[in-house]
Length: 357
Image (cartoon, rainbow, N blue to C red; front, side):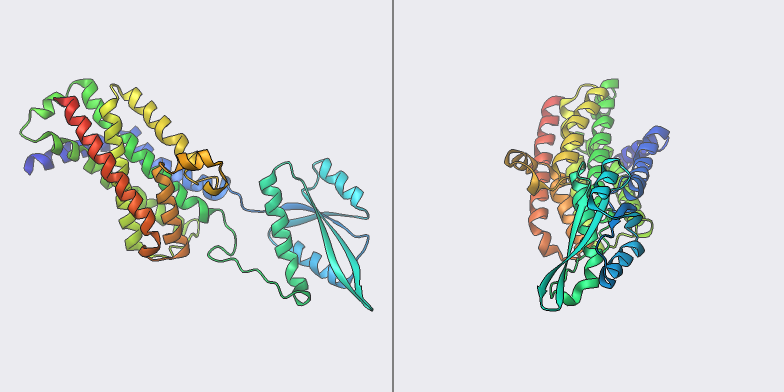
């Protein structure tokens, strides 16, 4: 046991004195959280709005006032005709135009109608602008329709609620798998792995001792992300913190197992780095549901995404953190992660032992 602890201490000291490694381990989570929380965001803010005033009424004016007072829209101009509004959008001087009109529905009464003209060069943002505009002006006419909309879990529609679990899934996978694989391959590349294996410690213990520091560092990174999410980005932790940590622990073990598997097939640190980037980075970003909903992908990509571990972790974290569900509601995701961990760890250890014989 003393030899095992000595190996753990040795690897920990090696990591701590490598300033570049520490910068990657703790600088990357902080930078990405700040970028996705404040810079790279899909939140609707300061949408340049033009209002057509050819047909106005007190009720319409009330709706426009609500729009002007919201944090989402800025009424930059008012024009007389829809044609003028379209010209402003075409010249990139406005993003959206509201054209009010009324049609008779009976004697002495009329029904309000709105035409929303949006710059559709970015379809996703155009859809969000139109939705936000409808939700903003709808309360002014709530008495005309019994239909109301309630947004659950994220009433302010903050993109950070979506990005934080995704960042957790990406960073824990990249850092644990990449750093573990590079650490083991470095020992092989320098020829010191053989020296370690002839020590009194069994080969399995050598590998576990090299993984333990990264396991501890992964927990430190996880705590850093959760603290920043709660106190910097304002993302709630609605679910049980205990189960969030339990599921994250399982995911970290899966990432470490994948790093061990990569180290068993890579001969150099550069090869391990490139293999980690190709196997992990693109699938995590494109197929895990981090940026694009899996349900919106073509069937072939949906099948491919089924073997991407972050997909299940991100889905579980969104349910636990944002929705506040119990562990039973993420049983499917946990079962898949547990199965993947068992398979990857078994294959990695077998290939590693065969390689070293």
